[in-house]
Image 1 (cartoon, rainbow, N blue to C red):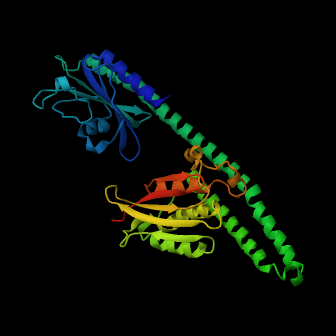
Image 2: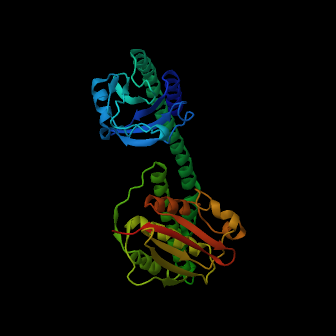
Length: 388
């Protein structure tokens, strides 16, 4: 039921039966697209198969007539871009070169084509060879359709497994991570209800803590929603030309009481092609991490510079925090992964932030990376495509 194995076995069997042949096996997909595999016979290069290519069926006129007639068709003087070329025996357009094109039909559905070309001295196809090809095509058609259905079922099963795992992850977040801030908020609310004398001197830190825990809950909910979209394979982007300085300055204003900020940005910084909301999420996640994993005197530096050669803008967020052990860096962007050291154990979090950031950046066709040294700080950098 494995499609590539079916195609390979079909190709090798045909090349054994038809001497001096080269052929292509085409598997139809949706929207007039198809995957193409090319083969040489043993007489040329030992069973060499080429990389799988994606083609548009309407771009290849030699497929048109067989797809309409649904019958094996022999054609001449066709300079086919589907078949592989033998360097030692290049065909000339003046030669009478027969091409045998066999449509693969399964339950009245066109599932692909076999295209065969003989390049030896006896280039014509006998009735027996056409009959053999047609018989094998009939068998292969059903196998290919079954293989495609099997692949679809496997893909659906994998999707169900991912959704099941996501359900488990979400239940963990709801039952544990959302419960903790609710407990804190509830406790402080009870203190406030006890009367003014209980909070006369401590009302400000109590309210600050309630606000902090509420923000934590909001972040958890936002992360949970983001994870559900990522795991389902749907990240919706509303792309526009964005000035990255605007979200940076907005986030600096929000977090200015938590640390010192600096900007290292050249004048006339070009815009990027991005989703404004997602860009804000990326930056906010990175800033929040930089603040969480640092001491009170942390300094965060924003920098941005265009890379014209690669057509992108590189944005960096540098902190002077605890730093990351080199052995931990390859795992940083994995879901639910958290650094295993004394500094991180006393910091709350789910390990979702950097995973979400990576998925969002890559959805923009960008990249993200990190440089870090223990006790010296970390620099998280990511690229986004330039506008225009």
